[in-house]
Length: 450
Image (cartoon, rainbow, N blue to C red; front, side, top):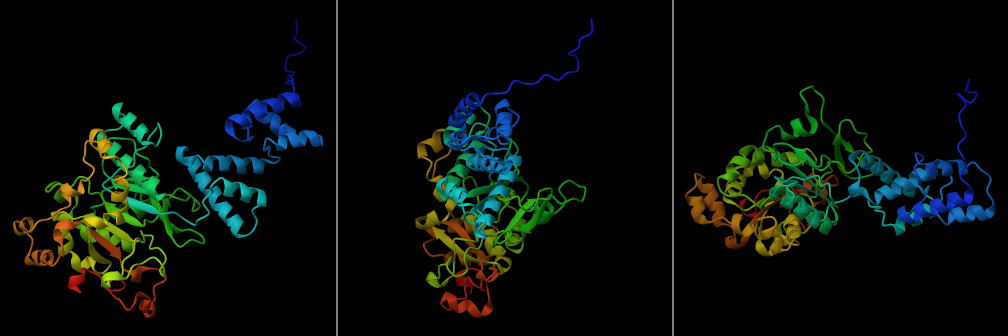
């Protein structure tokens, strides 16, 4: 017998308004919005509802659930919801949210953002600033934590061996850094044990003389195609590195850094010579300046001109005060003095190093029992004695420099501050702004050598 109904598309039963509103209310109570994906039956009901004639009472009911009347508004609220959950998003979604956030700032600047949306963004804690503070940590790795970002999550992953102790320790310190300074941390290392967050970590050898060309702008796979490109953000005084395949609107990927740290947490003699090679001091350190890898802050406000030296909290590299770093810096002082003013950080000034300061927020008990290290590693590795210099193969100029250091027993770090002449607003005729001090502006090196 022939089936007369064959090939006839059955019409789906329509959801009544009251039933749909009840489901929408449940969705709203669970997710905090009414932007139901169209892939769900309720989402299709919402889409059809926008084309129907509704009574004033029905419209008022939907308004109480923050129902959106256009697909554009629907997308806006979805991105706003994703923005508030940014750290937990997939990399591809983060790119879309970054683009959306940049568009909101542009709309506000032009006066095109509605008062309703502006009020919602303000109440929700949207960041209107044109950028963020970023820190680059050398010799550390930013792990991709699948369970979450809290210390408890990291501890759990170490216990279950999803993270090794070294990567877990790095991750805990990086999360502490981001939490205390409301910043984004980036890492570069060649450690290979854990799955790393590719938006925060670069697997590279920062000792290579062609580090910047090969890893940032150079050949990324042997096919002549650069892995990253450098772009300037519209209306912002900073540069940004993004993967070559991404659009220029993709923000917060390899952003310029306010401070750069060579990790001090493990640097015993012998190990440092193998891992921090000569080219790091002679090529990589100057390369951070010549390749515009710094946030240099406000030229007028962000500086300190005390003690006859102009310094800043922006555009700074911190190195451990260990024998190898000290000798290497002195041996390459002629090159480094073209780009940096070099000063010493005493133990009572360590809070100026944001990584050290954030690390101290982790309890000493947790650092010891969970991560296998004492909290004050600088006391173990960041000390240099005169006997160490005398027994080394360094020349007499190194010992002479060592003898000129005041209160050398309390020195823990070497600070390299980018000369102010590299700031975009620098002009030779405005150095009087710095009280007539040239050191740190257009004169570099150690204070005693100038």
